[in-house]
Length: 349
Image 1 (cartoon, rainbow, N blue to C red):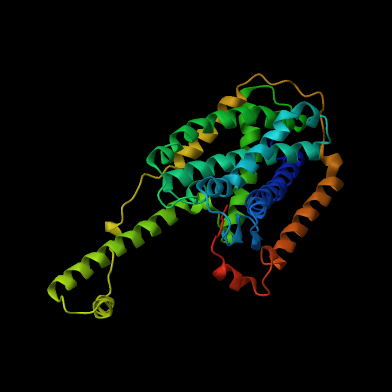
Image 2 (cartoon, one colour; image 1 turned 180 degrees about the horizontal axis):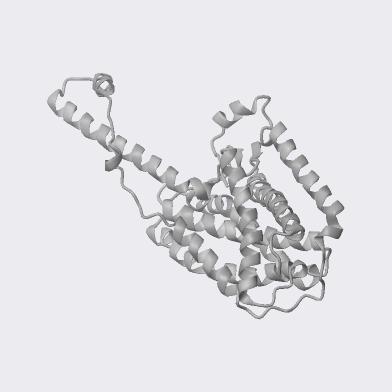
């Protein structure tokens, strides 16, 4: 079998475009079908909805009517719930979907992979680093709840193990691989390179997504907490030495001395991204060892150049539109930059 031929190059371009389009759809469903729709059901008004070029998104909403704990939990987790449900739908109806046109089949399986793996990663990183939707419903999440990241981490290889079966049934329409080595090589080159290209676009355009920025946000939160502790310590010391001083004078004195926090003083936690990625890959590699049903369709992408070109053009048009909108797909403000500052809830995916 010859690798890096025209067939494989076309497939890599197609997968890259599919990842871009389906990730934008998944983000749209997360923000609009999850957070925004839940807020509207509780009588809230939406200020801003943003879908970034290659990263996440957010919904700005006041949350004035969402008061109960259950309502806050539902609002915070609604985006993840929507992604999990919509990601499972193609798998449930896969026997019918696999008979669709190839472009539909590949889009639906990539959509499922992004929705399910993305939601799982968000739950794990959010709970571990106490950031984002998984903990947004409370300022002090209970420890038993935070420890659930272990459970979701154990699910990571199982999820990719299952998804690999469905993905390979699509890939096998294009590349008839007979042994495990060929399966690994073709999947690594095609899906791996496509993912790397998308990751490159993500980094070059300086995009943001909560599960990726969680470690940085954790450090920033720890920095602010440590700085506040030092401020309170300095305040109490000056108060004891000068009991007759007013609060304003004490604060001015502290501000003049400028409280500084050394980086070494900031508590750090063990990075789990490498472990999570390794578990995802492990599940996929084991999944490739499964006995797959041989595809009855032996397609040639070179005969689908027109359809692929149209799809690439659609992808470019979608990204161009988001760029022209500055990623703001809905805003009640004339100046959406001001609305970001006024919003009391910034939901990031």
